[in-house]
Image (cartoon, rainbow, N blue to C red):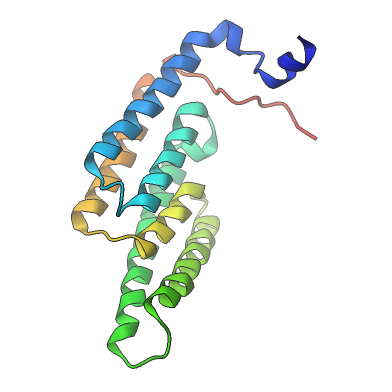
Length: 177
């Protein structure tokens, strides 16, 4: 029983309903996202929104769940991703030796690095938003996709704000070795 207690969060017994509620919110949010985005062509984009749902609904009081990193991080991730997406396809309009796959690799890596840098210097660090920059380079998308991403982030932030009195941080905040 002692080993099990080190695996299971000590807050679970007292807060089981909140764990179920908050994980249910994340599940419902991702269900809506999966209904509206194409699971075959928007895989990386969906994955980043899933990571954001994890942060927002399991750590609602963490800095990364707040408005500045959530909105600022996604603004940067989307802008950088769009720029590098266009660059990755524009390179084929001039004669070069690299393949489209190589362009995705190079510009995808650059998008993540630039997004991280911009988030770090503006204090808008939201790790999944750096992934969004990559997702926009390697996945197909259009303006409707971008609008949906923004709507999904606004929806999660709205739920977090509105339901904040009912939510707790589910993570164990003790220092770990």
